[in-house]
Amino acid sequence: MFKYDFTTYSQKGTEDLGKRFSGALKPGTEIAMYGDLGSGKTAFTRGALRGLGFEGNVSSPTFAIVNEYRGGRLDAAHFDMYRISSEDDLYGTGFYDYLDGSMVLFMEWCENIPFAVDDSAVKVIFERGEGNVRYIRIEAPEELSVW
Image (cartoon, rainbow, N blue to C red):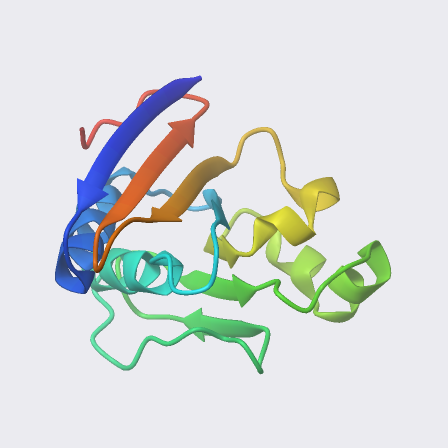
């Protein structure tokens, strides 16, 4: 397991880290994100999607559960698992249909779905510091070439 620790000092800094991270992504990469509300998960995802070439609006899929982004270097799906608490709930979102390896999966609130996080997933843990400071740890099963 490879671990990378970062500190960002603004939303833009968190987005820039996500953009840099996007260089390591390939079809089928699953990104399992953990952290409290406002800790930077969506900002990081927005940056990564910008790095993949998406220029439109990127927001948390809180009510939709999943937003799809197509037409960049890689297609991606962005999940919000905040309201998911069981395997049946997760199945009802269509999540398992996305595990065919064709898209990058960004999954927020993975602490709610530990049963569905694959060992091969890249884990990104967000912690809020004072003000806009964010502590971000990326744990990957293999070395990421962008660092």
